[in-house]
Length: 200
Image 1 (cartoon, rainbow, N blue to C red):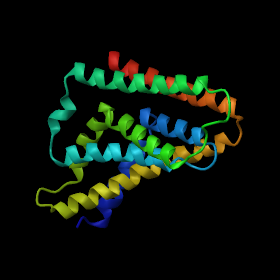
Image 2: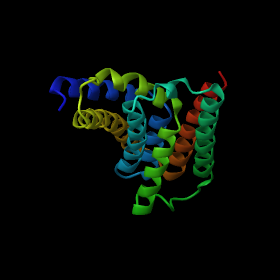
Image 3: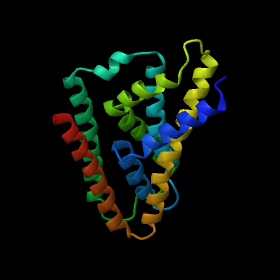
Image 4: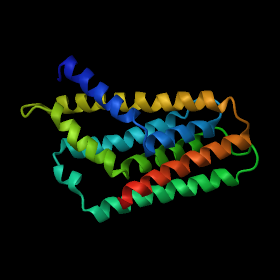
């Protein structure tokens, strides 16, 4: 079992890293606005599950992943950018209030979309591979690794829920048409950021 100081430290580090604006944060913000009432916990959970995949890779010691071929990294980023652009176009074309809400099917969709956006981000993967092993001990048990991973995921989830709170507050001030435009613009900005990272 990892000692409390290491658990708090990794949770704080992952919280800080996840607060930095990026594709997953933009998705959480847009998904929260999309719900209109309440929070999209599913979106935050989805991106956290994506981060779990990265942490599992890091825990297995696959440091080669951080050195992915440039073409593969660019393809992953452009795929995520294309997905976010498609989501933006869907929001911009929505004219009425139908389809808003957070029904179970909507929550499942947001969970899967959040996971896809998070797991397809090679920057997130590289961060997990670079940071997580710093908290592991050579003689550590599987239980210790799992405990550290749980603490890291708590920090990630807490950070993305902050974006959901911001989205919930903003959603109360917008009508449905304006909200669709803001959500669409958020997706477009995230897609442009991903595309820019892919080509540089």
